Amino acid sequence: MTISSESFKSPKLRLAILLLAAGEGSRLGGFPKALLKKEGHTLLKRFITSAQSLQPIEILAVTGFYSAEVEQEVQSLKSACPCSLSTVKNPTPESGQPSSVRLGLESLKSDYDVLLVALCDQPNISSPEIESLLLQFKQAGSGKEIVLPMVHEKRGNPVLFSRRVIDQILSIPGMVCRPFMDNHPELVKVFETNNQAYLLDVDTQADIQKLGLDPI
Image (cartoon, rainbow, N blue to C red; front, top):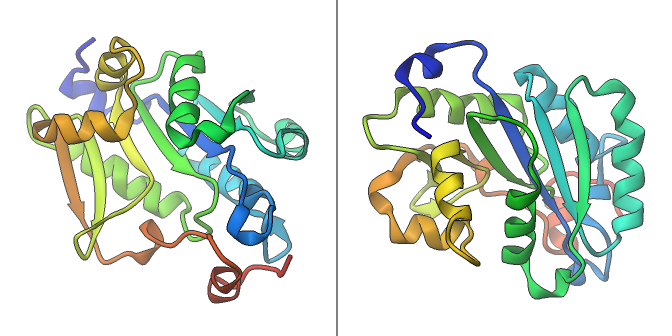
């Protein structure tokens, strides 16, 4: 599937979002990162609410550890979410993030043009950061199918992929996004930015304090 340049210019660019929320949060003492709170709202709610301004056609959250708690939070957000909002459970989250990514890619149901693969524990990622990735995607030169944010030579998240690339990934058994990007650097548009939001995530109790999250 080749996406025409006209579709990049269209305000109706069909965006899907894959949100990874299957982790154990072991360095937090065992707590679902997606349910950490900032200013009284979970990171999951803040991200999904903010993303609504971009009119995605589908948001799929991959759960694993704490699946019941995360799925309950997603369910509570459905009534206020105009797009398709659903979850899929990774039965073996201990296998690591690649297993969640692959399951998520296989479980998407919408006819999207671009896919944002996002982490659930980046509290400063909101619509402006996603809009910046979409703009980079629209402005990318011929042959560029992936937008990777880079902050001071460090890889950031989320990452934006064309449908064509996702179809290629799915055609290779066991393949996921990171190794595909490493194998095909010619497809990657590197987005050099100073925006620390693309790097900041939550791994430790110190991160909770640094990022202004409510204590567990």
